[in-house]
Length: 313
Length: 314
Image (cartoon, rainbow over all chains, first blue to last red; front, side):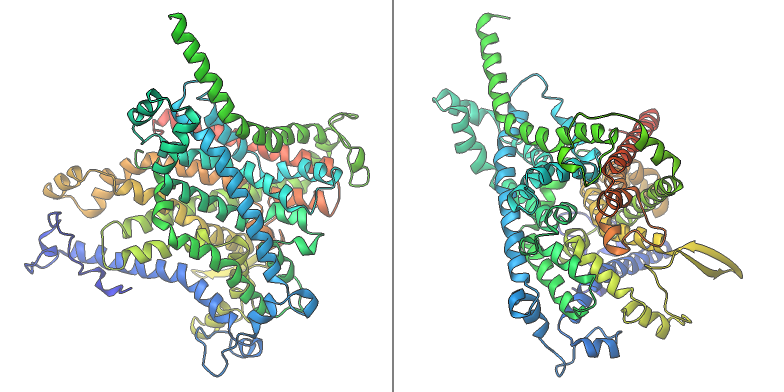
């Protein structure tokens, strides 16, 4: 991306130029505009560096040998002679073969996240449809569902769940963990889907009802196909939360190493001195890349789904 | 109301209840019941050893609360929580606002930059904290390497492991809570994208007429921001403040992963975790988490009341 073009970028067509200097005529910009324009460029550059550099650093460290890093800690590029992928091999190899077993952890994370997404979407599609379309007592109270779930510290919920799961011998169970995640994500999923369902014209559904469609038929044949983008966005957001989650994974899975999620694996190993930092950096990349890839695939839908309430103020 | 409509309405409400019942069931089992159970545990003497017999009913007493309120560690961790929450909430919203203003008008590469801006928020917390702790490491971290080489630092700064750090400021020695400031900075970095998203969505929906009229009137850029744009952003900023405050107040992961709660960064969530796992005192852990939730409710009630009085809420 070319940051230098910022100051001279032309106004988009279809909108009148805000100030004469933005157009083709070369009026000198006022001093005030130049000062703010410069500040703006500086801000953009600083923000870009602050958000991107840590991830560049992560990538660079993951392909440098640890000895080189200790020798030259401040270098942000990789010379071809030192480039290595051994870090990735070590982090992905199963524990039995002398590696760190991250491939297995990724499978665990993917399983938990997928189950969470499927169950959350099923529950929230029905719930969001009811909230956006049907009149019932306590409809307004569903808003408070949010508060009850998010107001209480996760650690508060973790205590009795820890006790309960211990008593039922469910600690270490990946599906039990997924159910906890569903409870954490259902309210936000209902919120995102409800906003979208509300934009579908009611007349479409009424026509289908008159034609003899049941309510479930309406949901399946009209609401769902029309809200596909929103469903994908919501599913991705839920996947992201489940994949990234740490506290419950720590409390419930820590004693079962073969059931660790990637997040838990990385945090457990980063405490030990035996595993080189560069290998753990490779682990961080492996943990981060799937989420970032998914995110960029659906960025626009996701952003619209999350902030659709904000535009109205 | 005629009889037929009433039956229809009843049918509809019955269907609605059926549709929403899976959600209610999950929330009931995984959220509501645990909260009730925590309340009951807080009044009992439950250790990890007698965990098997722990239930809703037992011998209730106030011992856990007297212990909690009587210990200085609890009060200091509550204070740390408040400082951390206020600092991180303010920081993330201010940076998010600045970012939204800077990216308000289109330029080439804005789309890419806008997406990149969300990286800290999207990336897994374990990976983000790990990169930060490596970068800030006094021995082989890039920040200390650059700091000592280019910025003239006398020695590496132990950002995450030192409680108090004295810096020379205008000829005076000022002591700052270094590790706490670092975790606040991390939190502001990680969550400014959240504020940025909401604020820029609102910014781009603002009508431009007011702004244009103000340009004709010869106002300065700062005046237009202060008296035209900012007031229109206040509702969304108020919403963000409350959301970020709640989430940060209850936060556990970020601090646990960065400092483990050491060096003056022990917030209540971390203390509860310590009681639960290291000290295996489940009753005291439950009592402290309840106090945390209660304090949060009080904060929010006060905030809502002041916001309503000022007429800022939408």
